[in-house]
Length: 267
Image (cartoon, rainbow, N blue to C red; front, side, top):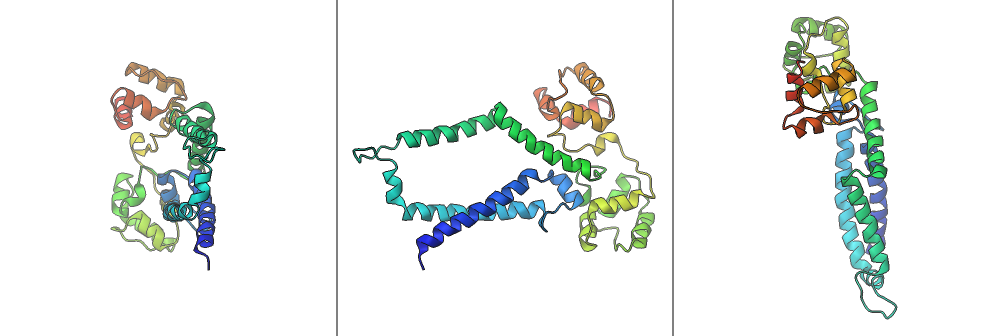
């Protein structure tokens, strides 16, 4: 067997798997939605895709180092001029450097072409939130059934009876995540079953999630008010906003957190 061939083939398989997992992570919903709805594609959830992506990144780096070792002479030849003199910044190297720098600077500075691509990914991610029923408050799946019932004003005993009638085994001190896992379902499904026969009572501000990603118009929709009304309320707080501005960035520009601004708005 040839270790050189094994190295090249390992690089090939690694980059194929990293490309696939990278695409899955690009289109996957935000973590709060993925965990709440038990989002999966081909039997893998967001956490599993992230883990596979990370481990194969390590494998790819190791294979790349070996590839450079086995192909050191050909790579050096790429950096030699016609006189066979080693020149690090050849025309080809400069072009490769410029392309790399363009992608780095373009991404960090949100240049149109790159920001459009990033926004496209964000739109895909946010579309999952419209598909699944939202959690009543962030990270609700990590609370025990007792804590969950208390926060949304559900009767605990009644909740346990409702779940039992649906053949779902649950204990008061189990988290929604564990209850869902033990019954091969999702926390979102558990909540859906419970809310069919009980009225939810929770503050609007407590139900907000994903404020770091949302625009002013999206936050206004969550607050169930008109975008112009939200912009007007923000102006009263000394925050000049436009409908497509990111809510979190505006809050940070005045030295406040999104939650603090929401509270000052009276929600």
